[in-house]
Image (cartoon, rainbow, N blue to C red):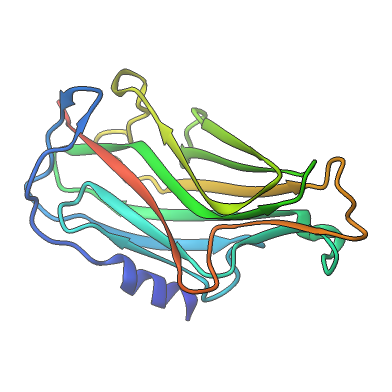
Length: 213
């Protein structure tokens, strides 16, 4: 049921209206639509029914929406709550003659970190069967009680492209980790989310396109 729901949400596409620019370089966009199907969603940060994927109208980005992504330590927390993760296994149907890479990713959420506590958002990206993996991480230190945002950017020259003429699943692993540090976990609670109490938080992945030889 989860996969059918996510696949339906993922199959949102339309005609290309422009060409994305990264680092001053204008890259081509495919003349046909793309479709992203969610093969699997696994992890303590994205339990069944709590994540969905949709493609932007211009085919240059896709968005993951979370509703239950929370890591915490302190009062009311379980020992395993300090770390939450989510792995997305995506099947990207690319128009003939094109390949793609993840050029950047925007993560947003909310953090309440006590004085002395800290939090980390971490992500890595790789194609199925490919040893090349890109890691990015962002640290946040308490005290803070505010929304947070982090961006992973990759220079065009360093992009890891999907193999031309092959259809390989694309994997995205994200992680939230909270440490009590010098704060008192017996009296306080620190947490980070990739969701919010009044609505969902979106994570946007920006695609770069390249024509195959």
